[in-house]
Image (cartoon, rainbow, N blue to C red):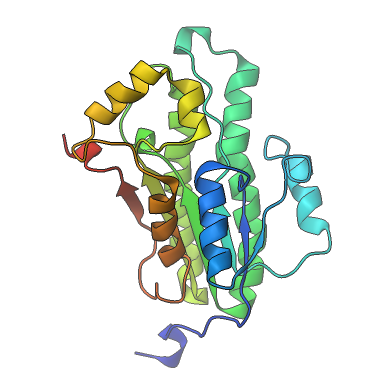
Length: 232
């Protein structure tokens, strides 16, 4: 193996950007990373509005530490049948779930590649792989995020930057509760072979590994963590 192909050492005092870290999976990821000594940037929606490319680009130009780890976690899941989707809803879903993450990945990867070390984890969804009625904008955007993950992994691998996507199944979060009634949540749990929804901390542990120096060879993958739901 040539020296250029060997994994480079991670920077001391790593800095992570975790979007959507105010609650749910994002909060669990931010807490788990901080517990390991990583400095976590977790801008509010007012500071970094993924629905607005101008807001994303403005945040990227502000003074901030260099980012070693990017976790594209923030997302929105509008519910409605295709026949009733208006263009604003469609465009916003694509902006928040795909275009905003792409802009962050595009710009922050340059910093990572220049230092020859970086980790990018895109939080996707099991609905990027299978369908559910009423979730077309979200599913389309997350499927695009999976594809972006693979392309970025190919382009950045020679520079020591690993890129992966994580596809959670049903997770006990505010977003899940807002999109489903208690009876619907019980029905979702009944579809999972393990028999329950995931806790955000279970997703966070996988993300922390993918974003760590312990991950030296795994890149370009869409990792499903769903309690066995997609096996059926």
